[in-house]
Image (cartoon, rainbow, N blue to C red; front, side, top):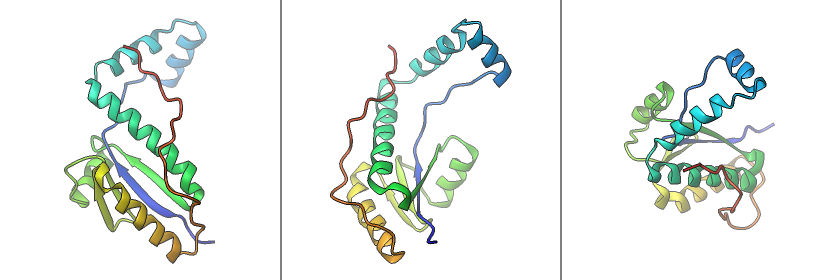
Amino acid sequence: MTRPVLLEVLSPLLTTMYHCPHCEYIANQADLRLSERVHTEEINEYPEDWKAEYLHLSEWLRAMVAHYGPSVRIRVLDPQSLQGFWKSIKYRVWRYPAFVVEGRERFVGWEAEPRLHEALRRHLEARDLPLPQGEFRLLRIPTLQLKT
């Protein structure tokens, strides 16, 4: 079986700190809603443009999975993580989002998206994987609602 085409997406992600799973479970069972309040506060500390970019990236990723299906494997990396930092250096990426196809072809910024789809199509054809039907469209999917 042919392996799917690898697409690495490097983009800053909104992160929150969690307690250990046992403490989270106990707090949730006790209906304290403590962790929900804490995580909401953490998320709301991010600037509005970061939150908007995160929501756009989330919608885009869902649309990519719907469009390409199992033929494209998507790996999302946060440049603030150790692995994401290493990949940023390896691929010489200093602006985000950045997209890397099969560890070789690099596309930076949303303006590079049409070229990204061309590269994915080339790789799918080279591997005899099914090509997606129609043009890629960003789906308007109900997304995470960030409380203000």
